[in-house]
Image 1 (cartoon, rainbow, N blue to C red):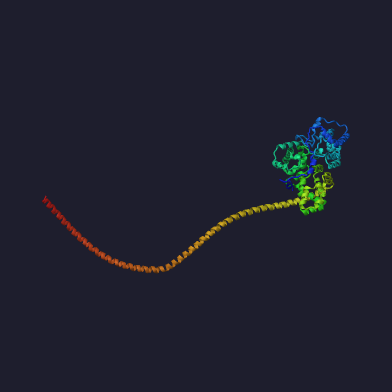
Image 2 (cartoon, rainbow, N blue to C red; image 1 turned 135 degrees about the vertical axis):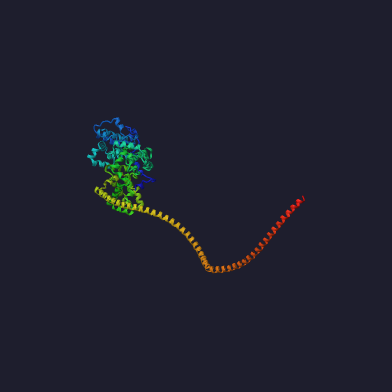
Length: 556
């Protein structure tokens, strides 16, 4: 798809032949009313004949005033002020004959130093300036009265000096309101400014105007303004490739107007909406037309796995400006603005038809590269041949409408499938969430299981230990039970023995007690005797003391 073709970081190359048309864009003074002697000398051999012929066919012309000359700015002269218009007033051009003189002045003022005089002369010799002057002066009338002649001239190519004005007339883009809105949008900020700035150097990288500051500023302004003007589309790099050719032919505010018309009135907007429905429909139509007109090519593409979106999406999204020379791009713009976007199918089929022998000899990689890079080589820079072959291809509106309906049916079917897939995805998402929850629960349970397992191991160890302890206790109980069975007899025999010993001891103690009682009685008797003797001794002592006292009294 185009997102892959125009993706970030991919170098965008432009064939060298593109410079042949770039030379039309020169920065000459917009206010110059006469050409220099050198310009006159250069152009005399190429344009003087046409100028003289036009002058003979114009009767009763009034000379233009200086103000008229000053008010006109050539579309191929880059504006020094963005507010100046290449098409100051179409109505004023139609109201008087001064437009013929302005046309003559434009022919003399055009300066293309990078284009050879021979090629310019050949191009101008094939131009019917009388017809084009009539178209510029009264486009609506010519379009109604001579549509076939106008279409033939448009197929041959709009003269470079008139291209900017003609594009605006064909697109019906001239609008003061839109130009004022453009100026207002320039003062606003866009969320896409960084992306636009990043892509500027990758847009027409070999064109000096777009590699200079002025061209980058103009391209930035137009694309940024459109990103604000159409918020649903916003910005895509393909928009820069559509705006670039417009800026090479008119000032930015007019380029913005034509860009808006291309996107809305010419339905190019459907190539850039988020779903790109119209782009997909046109690619589907291209596949159908290819199967109708070049079935062998269609089968070869299918066999090699080549789908139209792989090569034609960049053609349709950028109107062939992504890889094709600007001279070719300008001619394609001429036909698109004249006949609508269906001309893209014709150009694509013409290219494939011209290259069919080469394409049939290639396989996937070389085939896809050729479709993207080398489709114009067979034309040898002959743009007219490409346009002629494109218009020689007949496109049936009924066939296109039938393909459109088939695409709608396929789209409805795809949308139904997409809805089913979307439902399945939602269910899958819900199930995935359920699975994630279950996984979390499972993980939690696994953690709990690990903890329980660890606790079980501990419990088993404890149980083993308890079993061992129980075994020991059971042994002890068994031993105690055995001991209890023997204990009564043992106790009885021991009690009997002890009783006997106690009885023996008691008998001995009784005997001893009786002896002690006898000793006590004896000792009590002795105590009584001693007390009697003591009382007697006391009486004797008192008697002796009395006698002592008497003696003391007797012997003082």
